[in-house]
View 1: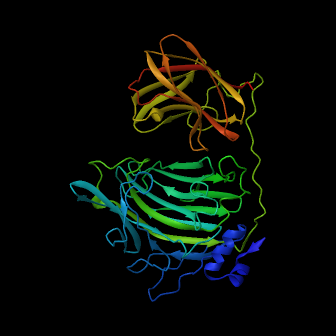
View 2: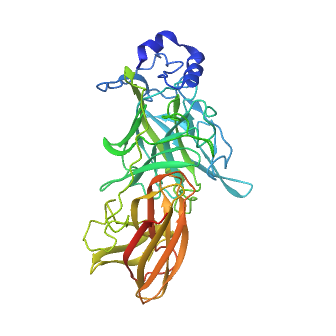
View 3: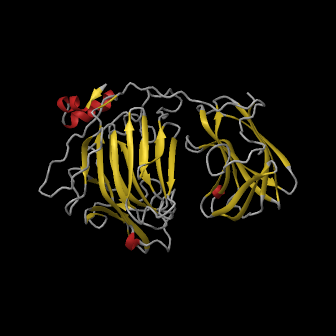
Length: 464
């Protein structure tokens, strides 16, 4: 058991951060907590059970550079993003009590050129364990990608990304500002766990919303507007081919907060003629960091729990579609639409019937999934199902790893589907780490087909 008060009395300056990284099991506090200025400060509210560690309410009219660094990066530095991050006041400024990170479109050598803003608190307000609360409003527009996230002060301690760990409190793809993502990245191979929240009314661009994470030695909990979005406790860090580092690595070292507005990149895609750069502003109302008096660092990684097979050896629940179930939840089967996919799925007569009006822009735009399947290292699995369609078309089948960087245990396999029932059988052997979150997918998007698909008798068996 370690206490915040003890560390403040013993450690100071940059020595604090270096010692804490080396021991990896103490609470880190900022090396230099900002001092009071002449600007009238908004009072940061208290939270029961926590102490205020540091905060920025963005009072005044300039960025507080005792807390924040203006990060400068060339275009394409990561994720194939288009923007140059600059230190310019055109991209980073404080206005009306809000930090504004603004994307600006111009022209260089006859080509579109983008600049934007990114700030981080590295080596100024690093900390280990706590509660981070941020209020923000995102812009709208294809290709805009705001984020509130955290990275380790010493990225080399466990190794470069993703071994070092990454905590994404909020990301929004601004072509759809009704959905927000919270994610952690870790491991080698790259693994991730992600939660999403989609608003029934309004959007994350129409008003300010509050995003937070409670980071503790053995668990992280992510919230949006006080609603729990994601709980994680089973991460790891490792070099390829080596044993895992002692849990809870890599999330047992000092991290810092950063915020940015990216333009383009692998995930959101590039901006287009509809993107309004006059209003491409990511606004942050406040950043508040709290910490408990003490944290119990004596934690162990939860035991991996695998789904039990049915009496007939099948790991697919309701594989014969004999039960009607809610296809909007993640219990047994669920049906998903993304990226302009339009359609519906119903269970009747011992089969699932999937009809489409628009196949969308991605293979997963129209998707049927059964999650939480066991995939053990060295085990061989057999996938079997019956399928037909109203008209000849194709369907892409795979077994994926949503918690392990979306690798494929059963590779994406395109099958030809005709009007007659056909039985397909596939086998694969996993050489990856044990995974209790394998996912069987039927993907029906982006190939130009909207004919109705019928599936039944789905089986997933361990035949080792």
